[in-house]
Amino acid sequence: MATGYIGKILKIDLTDGQFVEEALNENYAQAFIGGSGIGAWYLYKMTTKKTDPLGADNPLIFMTGPLTGTRAPCCGRYSVCARSPLTGLWGEANSGGNFGPILKFSGYDGIIITGCSSKPVFLEIIDGQPIMRDASHMWGMDCYQTQQAIKAEAGLSKLSIACIGVAGENKSKIAAIVNDQGRAAARTGLGAVMGSKKLKAIAVGGKKQPKVSDGKAFNTAVNEAQNFLKEDISAAMFRLGGTAFYMDVGMMYGDIPTRYYTQGEFDVTKLTGATLSETILTRTVGCYRCPIACGRKTTLEKYGASDVDGPEYETISALGTLLLIDDLPGITYAGHLCNLYGMDTISTGVSIAFAVYLFEKGILKLSDTDGIELKWGDVGMVIKLIEKMAHRDGFGNILADGSRLLAKKYSVEDMAVQVKGLEVAMHDPRAFSGMAVAYATAPRGGCHLESDFFYVEIGQEIPEVGITASPRGKWTESSSEKAQAVSRHQDWRSLYDSLIICKFAGYSANLVTKLVNAATGWHITPRELLTSGERIFNLKRLININFGLTTAEDKLPKLLLEPLSDGGAKGQVPNIEMMLDEYYQFRKWDKKTGLPTHQKIKQLGLTL
Ligand code: SF4
View (cartoon, rainbow, N blue to C red):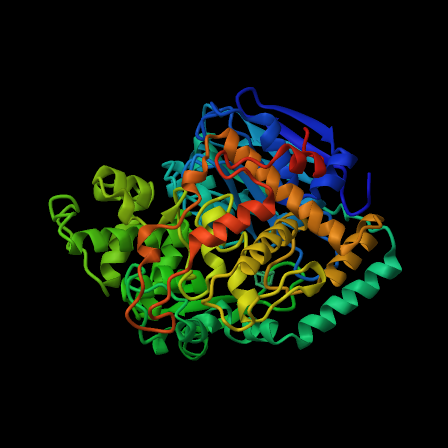
């Protein structure tokens, strides 16, 4: 087995409590790298179109990559994959903190969980010893209480724990998995998959260190990465302001969704990274071996909450600008509730904003909302609704399953801003047209991370692998070159999610290649790494087609194709049809079926 990996996967069947160790297949590791790449390969093998996302047969896959747990900076994330209960398609989320590296130190590259337990349990893996423990007394605890309880019972403060809160227990389709206090693998509702298996938590600990192939070359590459992060302006912005640094920059571009994606301008002075630093910030925190430390810890006197995690940019926008709220402590508290209950802050904010939008239009009435008046700018209402969503109480029971089902219930499907069932994230494709094709074709739906192409359009290009923004600077122009560049960027991001590298580390392709080769002993080029990303992206496409996806779902919601009357993206609408045509052609995907052609499948070695 190549170095970088531990070489072992742990398989668990919760129905009969059996553990099986399996060697990680070297050939598949090289083909699919790790993280969500290997996760996709297992999911492809283990599911059919009949797999119930909340059933025993849906595998829940936790996976690390060959750089996880090494000295490489910003490589401390883990992936979790399953069939998504929210979209019915490929489900994937990743999270930082320490869980990924410590999972590896516990003796495994990944864990694959099938079956359903008859009572609440948690899995403990310390130094290669997996044990299933009773979690009946933890059912009902929030994510922070759960982590504290497990550490106290084990008498080990150095455990890292990934767990679900009440939302996951209640199988909310927007439930998250939360680790290391408030770090969340939030998107696509994988907390509900964990809840359906009655698996409250996974606790890991251990001392096994992954080896690297060429220590000297690896140290040189690590030093280069550290020096890069010291000098990179974007890394400096994340360090100084957290992800909230983007609030005023993004508003200038017209990139920040406001008033349920219908308004282009909003005064964000009270929501910026600088305001956060001057008012509620207590300290900054970083994931494993991350010199950027974009994480924020805050104190909220009004709510009697201290050592609160966040808020991050996506949370401030989804629970703030999208609802015309500029009360930073209130938004932070709403985000904190999502962390406690284990909920995706993006899907939560977008679903609530959609409800307010429908209420304003008279489609929802007081009799639908348990008597709560839904209005813009009301953070108290948001807090109330989050409580109801987590507990599936009254109107919260509908909101807990996201905006697509809410739209379906009131027969207003074309009003919901979602793609393939996933609520669209906080970057507006009318501001950066590359995001239009990125959202329409992302394997998990309205996701900004499977290609955060807005960064490329701002200037974070990766020219060694052909990722450039053309025509440079004209971010609102749609072009066929842009569709091609988005396609390459999706491949590159699939690689990042497999290694796994944080996307805030804007390494050159050459530097990523040096880290990978020195860790694993492979001799691959940046272009070959890009091809690995393309293989993984196409595999996720095959999974989605198996689950019933058609090209009819490769589209943008109607609201995002209406021009805004104000703000930085005023009057702009991306030419999605033209870009999609170019995209399918470039990807060698059949426009009718959405399938990669036989030639492409063969070229990528995907005849599995
Ligand atoms: S930049 Fe932020 S999210 Fe990324 S690894 Fe560092 S602390 Fe974690």
